Image (tube, rainbow, N blue to C red; front, side, top):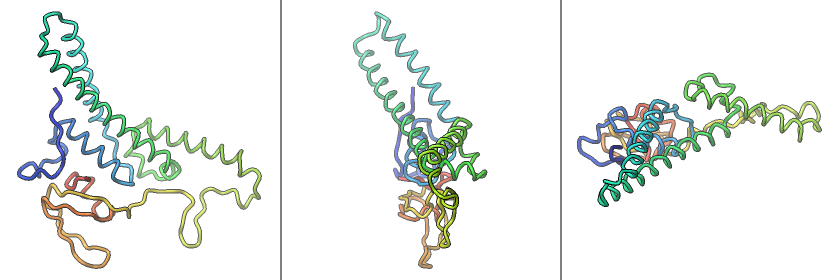
Length: 222
């Protein structure tokens, strides 16, 4: 059976629960919200997704067996409906998680391709898609627009004098709402004021100020 999911900020000893100690469904909820709530593409949770798929497969086999058994009681059929509902919820989270990552990959495909340090955060299939998508995008622009422009206007990777690049990349200055599951120490805000990220506290801060704590799992995106 899948474990019960849970949100952040319940208080007590649960505050110190890191992702590695959570059940799969609860952890899936955490990484899903984190992926949706941050502009940067997070590390691909391949082991978690594989584990979720294995459990979904086991659950489906159990459901099929019990549904086809004439000795299954009405009460058991009702419980099976609850199990199937939970399975659909988990499938939705997986689909949404993958779609969110795909949206980021396509939005920042060129940046991903030319930035090797980002590659370990993607699965092999995601990295291949980013490369292929970038190639298709360049080919499309080349044939539809760039070929008709002067040579000096055909570049797609220029950087202006004010440092603005034509290649879109993740914005690490966007605000994120976080809940601190561990004491994350103190940070310095842009105005020079200190801010204590104490265990159990909630903050709305720029992503780049708390990036390390989010990636460690010490701070949970809400």
